[in-house]
Length: 344
Image (cartoon, rainbow, N blue to C red):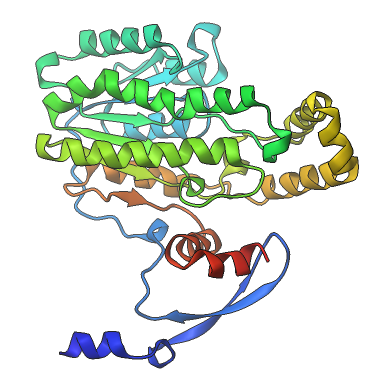
């Protein structure tokens, strides 16, 4: 009865306070009721019930040349895991590879791994199996972190670009997961897929990236249902804006992408939109890239918890309050409401 009474109360009578929201894209402000019953942003959870690895738990991480993967490999190594750091640039002696190899540790091993290559993925499986004391006991964790990104409105983006981003972010995740699942099933281990806040909410000029991350979310949910009775736990980590920390976009790279994009546009598109409109969108992208967080520890903590907790969360949201609240509005309220705030 008490619960029914609470649920029947008008929203205006719920305890809380008003919250003024500034849309970072157009500068407009909107006022919302923010109730005390609302959940704390999940990127700010206090993680508990962690189990320390015993030194034999093996984890493979893709995309360790730089960014999240590079930091995560070193962190999990320090926590006692046997880490296989998949690096695209291992054979070319990338900077990240050299630093990890310089640790000269039996518990941190770099592996040549292009997630777009079935041959290299299968070789990585063989490398892991040959390194395990007892392959029949399997591998504890897989972190699908490898990814690329780009930007550009739909009419500005070539079909080849869509395919290139999907081949790494989506099909690379599927390919690697399918290849390692037998080992993960034997260990009743963990799959952690790095998605993005843009896997839950769309954003202008990011459709190639959003499509792939929405796909990763769907793949992860399906896999979680299938693996539950087999004892494998599947988690998704959805970072906010960490572009400044991952060095995905330097000013030079943004300009290089923009020049190539403009040069390859059909004449009718260039004529209809005009160079001024195009340049304004590029400038907006530069501003967005400079606004991201440089502290990756919330992402690293989320992945660590997903690998070590007795009951890991289904989703982790390491992002600041603006993006967390925006994600809740877009995913929980009617589209007309979120459109009014973020589009109109």
